[in-house]
Image 1 (tube, rainbow, N blue to C red):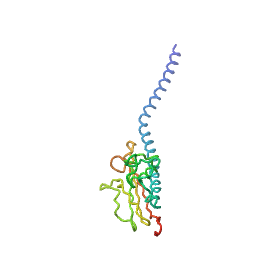
Image 2: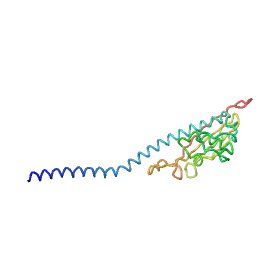
Image 3: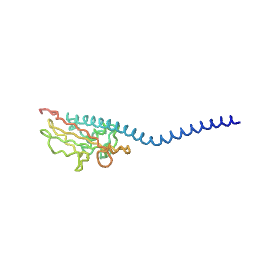
Image 4: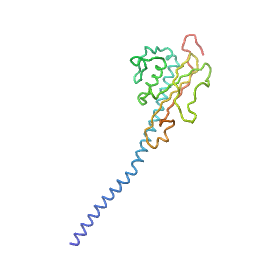
Length: 209
């Protein structure tokens, strides 16, 4: 009788020990899980940010080539079709109301696979200079040192002009806690920026640089 009681007691002890181990593991996971998933989400968003930055830079360079070769200057924006992934313009049927809307949409088409808010978040600034870079372009930071988006402007210039093209995109940071490290402007957003500079080609007959 005593032997059976001791045997049953050992079985119950092993059973409770396994249950206690599982409970401890569950409690430990509850403490670690928030930190783990926050770090995981932060790593994923940081990687996406790097990819988005490269996407914006490529779209900026591609659209800048339209200006450099004179293709942008020679495009009839009123008759231009909306490119795939573009946001369109403010005219009837999303047609373009001016050349600035058309050119901005060319950048939008290059980033629409990842950066979809072209209307509210994308800003494109194109400024031409007849000889070298001037000092008329605005700073990209405010008085407090926070980054600010560029002002929308489209002045592609003429053959042989020097052109500075800058684009910015306001990326809303979604990772909690780590957003303190990712946010670089007011409003809880991360400002992506890209720049390209070039001299326009002599794309008209008789012009020479």
